[in-house]
Image (cartoon, rainbow, N blue to C red; front, side):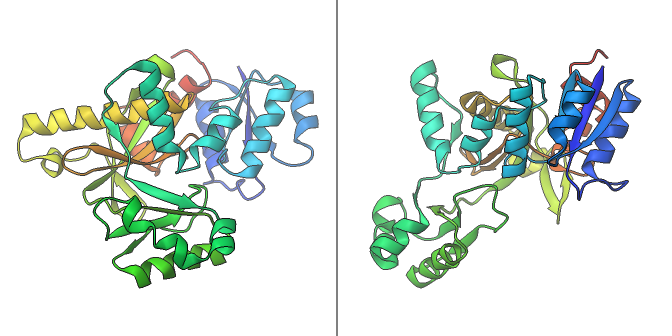
Amino acid sequence: MKIAVLMTGEDQGQDSYGSKACAALTEAGHEVVPILASENMALALAQERPDMCFPAFSRTEEQGLAAQELLSFLDIPAVGSEPEVCRLAIDRRAIPRVLSTYTELTDESLAAACPAGFSFSVECFKAFGVQKVLDLAHKQIPGGFPLCVKPRSAACSVAAVRVSDDAQLKSACMNLVDQGQDVLVQQWVEGVTLYVAVLGEGWDAYALPPAREVDDCVYKAPVEKSILSPSESLAEAIRSEIERAAVEVCRAFNVRDMALVKLIWDGAQARIIEVDPSPCICPGSAFAASYEAAGITFPTLMNALVGGME
């Protein structure tokens, strides 16, 4: 197959995501055409007419979303979810609503849950006053402090902040508002933070072994059973519950091909934190830790994603 790998101007080095994707697809036996995501991309795609595109950048950012829309216009198949799915998934506020709708449609009892919380836009804070908005926190979130304050958009790189009182809450919210970020305030969930890679779509979707971060941007999979429970049999059941929750949320969002679900196992439930429908999957990523634990190589995964035969 002729595969176009779309990459940004900053993603052309030997160790970049795009370059690794090109090498993996070439190793899998495909004809690979690197194309820069720029104003000339439409012309390059029209000239090359690839069988499939692999966007080697996040479609949760505007450039990636625009590229996906262009591919749809040119009627060129691409790996990954539709732009509207990506836009919805990066809104962390949407997770409980999407899960609720999914439950109503399927009448399923879900393993996936979401921390209670509330969200306000920058405009709301400015129009109605920070303190008046934040005074609602204790009424909206059961249990009160500690709380988690973070940007509503998962595309923002600003980290979540744990706050323990009103002063910290106000300060954390104002910091985000000053940066032009809408605010999400949620229960602070204690537990094991895990990353679950999901492949496929709909009822054919399945989870790979959960990974956890053992050092800064260093991931290990599968998660040790002892971290989930002292009982080996119970740990296996918990892992199955975690994987089921990750697949459920991907089905609920109509994710296609691949996704990375960040969740916290709080000892009783899998609390969904984020759904990334356009994760980095190259070696060294959290996604890679999962597929490597499943015995899958990067070229094999790339080949499968573009519809190649093993």
